[in-house]
Amino acid sequence: MNGYLNESNFMMVEEGFTTRDLLENVLVELCQASNQQAFFVADLGDIVKKHLCFLKALPRVKPYFPVKCNSSEGVIRLLAELGAGFACTNKVEIARVQNIGVPADKIFYSSPCKQVAHIKYAASHGVQLMTFDNEVELSKVARSHPRARMLLGIAADSSPSAHPSMAFGTTLESCRHLLETAKEQAVEVVGISFHLGSRGLEPQAFARAVAAAQLAFDVGTELGYQMRLLDIGGGFPGTEDTRAPFEEMAAMINSALDLYFPDGCGVEIVARPGRYYVTSAFTFAASITAMEEVPTEQPGSDEEDSGSKKSLVYHLSDGIHGTFSCLLFDSPCPSPQLHKRPCPDHPSHSSSLRGPPGHVEDHIADGLELPELQVGDWLIFKDMGAYTIASSAPLGGCPQPQITYAMSRVAWKAVQLFLGKPPAAEDDRETLCAPLSCGWETAEAPCITPALAPASII
Image (cartoon, rainbow, N blue to C red; front, side, top):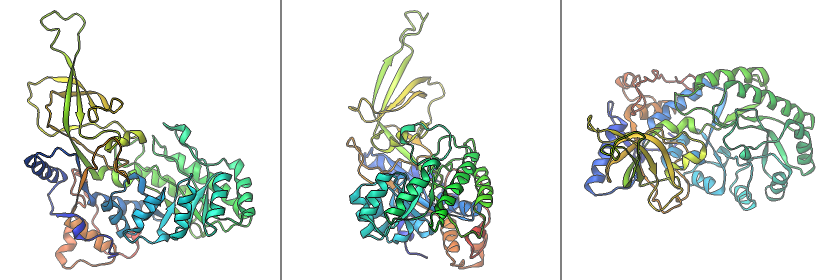
């Protein structure tokens, strides 16, 4: 074992114990203490299963988890234990992963726009791998970090982004000029990077981006650089209800890599899967702290029924300045589940969800059909692992929700097996054929057998 994660970092649960069971236990404790603070339940076994699937589907690609996607300690410790690297966007994230012992050579300072102070921090803490896509960024690094190993970020073809102004990467036409400028400033360029994003991504977009990266590689090689690293970024789906399943994307990526960067060419491939790892592993619970009733007059209704229709606004104990900041990162609008089963004869009402009272702009969701709820009731949100947990304290006065980590015993044994520690007894081999996740999923994980090569684990 690598020593980043041990049994004191999570709650061990037995087969058949679900995330919902754990959530109910936490709710009972909070209700007994009259505590209405929002909380997460995180199924680490789900992340273990995702990691094993990633290594099997993309055997040539090394994952670097983007810390900004989920900076919780349990996630970082687990992925470090599994041997993943980390993509950090600032010195706070670098410090977070180094504080648990992650070495500098497993950290990629992936932000395309870096503060000079943060570049110097990375330099003083041994972090060398960085990216750039313009002359200003190049000059900052040349002055502040002479030992940096740089990746040139190129703009990749992808589906329209919700935030086009936030797109990064230079054009292929500008690659030669930037690489020549890097040569003049004695900056070491070791490869190419691109990032497609995760909004409605088509698998063919990866193939086009890999082809473009190969052209940029040729320019770098022509100028005398030892181009040996390709970063294919992120954009992998975190749930199964997506237009393009992960396996379909992986097949397209493998085909493109075999064509443009064949095995044995000396180029290392890395990726930055974020949502893929954590989205489905986290379930979130928030209580209703206030409610408002807005009467809705129905056309053609008589006076007796004119007040029977209404619209309800519920304020939760968390909002877009905290956990629901995921909405600002182009995540889908969350669909809540009711903790209490509603009475079948109670009508549904058009409902909206808002953050804590006093924040007018804190809109979470509109147009929901919910029964009439009461202050103190709880709403449950699945698939809440991506861009919901910040590395710093949330704005707006919302306390940081507590996180209860859980992992099934069979998933923990799978981690040990993955790292080369054989099962203690023969019956352990049988239990490893059970699902790795303690969550609400019904899909079975493939049976795991001991192996040295990560790609052959599942």
